[in-house]
Length: 249
Ligand code: PGA
Image 1: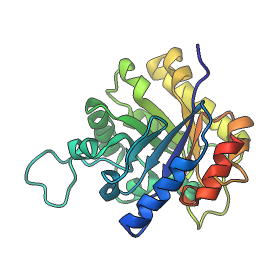
Image 2 (image 1 turned 135 degrees about the horizontal axis):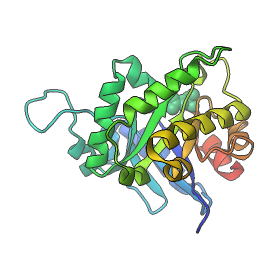
Image 3 (image 1 turned 90 degrees about the vertical axis):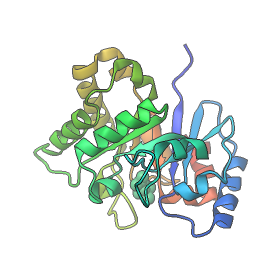
Image 4 (image 1 turned 120 degrees about the vertical axis):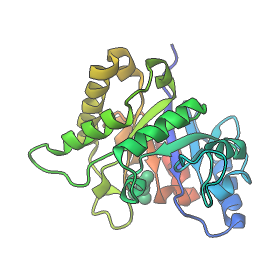
């Protein structure tokens, strides 16, 4: 059996401003020398996806999916349209979507829809705040149980979990998490998966770290923290940083 891939997922959020910049940024990403074990997913704003072309190394992802069917849903994007634009991955349950109103139930419906449509799902979970008593683990359990309700064992080959503590995300974050804590939470996530879906699925499902990943700390999450990959926001917008991360992990 080959070694498990290391996922490098770039979440561009609402950047950049123009299509021209998006094409330029993507071109820089295609020039990065990724290692054979690395699996790369770039998630640009939905309007730019169709102007970028996935390669054998780099797949395109959506940052969210909407539940709108085909028809009279003004302003929505249907999931088939995302697929047709070239997306094969979808980030679901990102804290910035949860803050905008996605409940565990909505996240669950989006996960089921994306899987049914053939997408690979990058499911984000993570607590708002860390407390000494370990209450935050309950939040993570709740999010996982809620999001994965009704998912079949056979669908797990298309599921990745991204642990993103909300307090570590974005430029207002005070700091990233530590590799030690990530490893402990990743084990907890695997325990929850094991209870519901069995140990085989728990072991096989990749658990990524996200939240202020930088050129400086990326390697430590993969090496010391044993992360199966990284979900990278700000640093993925700087080709030099992204290149550095790719060489370091
Ligand atoms: P950040 O974002 O790397 O800029 O903290 C990560 C994310 O929200 O996915």
